[in-house]
Image 1 (cartoon, one colour):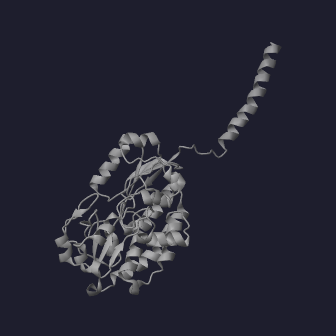
Image 2 (image 1 turned 90 degrees about the vertical axis):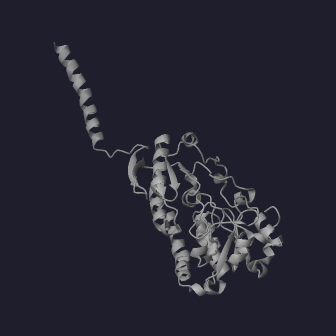
Image 3 (image 1 turned 90 degrees about the horizontal axis):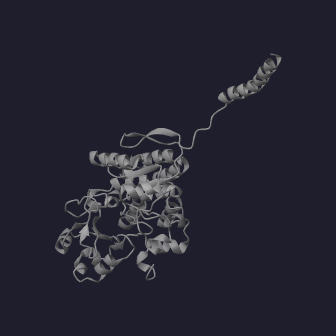
Length: 359
């Protein structure tokens, strides 16, 4: 009997310290698990659970420049194939990402924590986002692509990804450079507004009229888009004839490059006898839109349009705006593209027509 009592006492002596350790642990602050979730609301008004700490982001084409600006280290995909000239101005880590802009199966293989989708927000795009989330099991965070929404877009994306300081830097650039410019552009009298044709396609006979997000920079810079054609959805590129261009008689012709950085359109317009009949070409008001590392107007129509609008304003109204393009371009590249430019690079970016062949 005495042995049994001693055994119970021993067990109790072992149990009490363990009990105190267990109780003490209940009062310690627990660290959240790595996959702890929070609820966020995107700009479509959709609430969705996302990881507490987001480390991997898949992005669609229209949102690619925005995500590159905000957090390139979080990207798991590259939605474009870039030429060597474009890659030169992009981070090596980005250039090494897989080119993926496709199926749900491809997205799943990349294991993103969230999908960032930038597009026009409407019933159709919301339905598509919901379907994509259901197929992949990954929350889709929707953001609009309109320029006037950028301050809120930057803030919400910065909060989602815990990049608030970078969001503020991007917003600060818009406040300093773009907002005052657009306000002054709106005040230009109709009689003094430059009439602009946006030349796209290999021969310059495709365009995007007023109302298209591909040509938005023209209006924001105070120009009038002369193209009186139907807005084509998606990729745009409304076909026109040379007769229509001559009839519209623009003051200025701005020339695209598409993707890849080949200036075939500019070369064609500069050597084609039909184009030489256009007053803007004869008067020397034919300008190549800069295109590195992303087109400054569109393709994709993202935050790259901020710099494109500044450039367009200076081309259309150099006396009215007197913009220091070198300074604006340098600041934009530092903030949005994470790249410090030297004088030679600035010249090559702003004057692509004078760049050596193959660059």
